[in-house]
Image 1 (cartoon, one colour):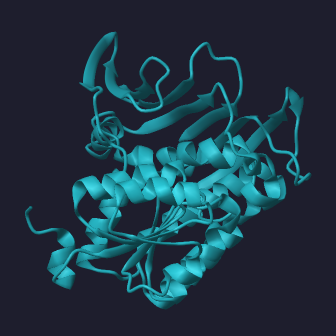
Image 2 (cartoon, rainbow, N blue to C red; image 1 turned 180 degrees about the vertical axis):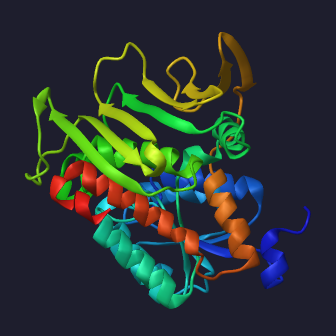
Length: 345
């Protein structure tokens, strides 16, 4: 094995703890184990069956039941994949203990919680990142490169959607007090990030939205219910118009529909999933009636966001200003949910 980025800073691979060993935690754990870029030192989860499955991936790692026990190990960073309602508290505890943090989205149930986590990272001077996974697909990377080179000209409109024909399988997703919301905070967060990231995070001037639950207009006021369908529009600096839609459990005729189309003065680019897949994506460049395939599946992108954080961690485990992007996305999500917060953008 060649020297990892971690060995450049530590003289060894970064030592990681995993908090949460459910499906997503194990997916990310497999990526780390396969890459051999970090040492998985310890795993924490209150569910012993989840720990047993995680131990098959990292058989030398210690297994414990909670974060307090996890923090007794000498760790450079902690990967958090717990339910959304405890992300902020878990992240702050880890950061205060001196560990860098990679947290599943959302980092907080709202922008205030997210800002508190970022504040803890800044005060502790520790690296913080979240799993904006779709940035790291080959398809989105190719579109990002086109836009950065201004090959499409000025982007004047962006149209995005993420529809899932079935909703999450954990009850806590449907309790806003725990999850922070429904399909918007779960799926729409990725769409907001893709809109802003590709355009270098311009200022968001206006936000409007309509939320629905079981086909009826919905407002996020009852902590025991969440939206399952949403439309939102944003106006960005320099007039770029963004429209997004997301849903859980709606008729699609396929598992999922995931798409982001960037309309520019000189052409357009489209990111989309293939055959209803959650994992296979393609990117195309359009000029007039011409179509140019930029890339397509297969693409093993699982865990790339985490591996990128590990690489940065290996070079420098210090606070990075781009953590502010996490808060910018959270503020837009807040504004989609609550009109009274739109002046805070």
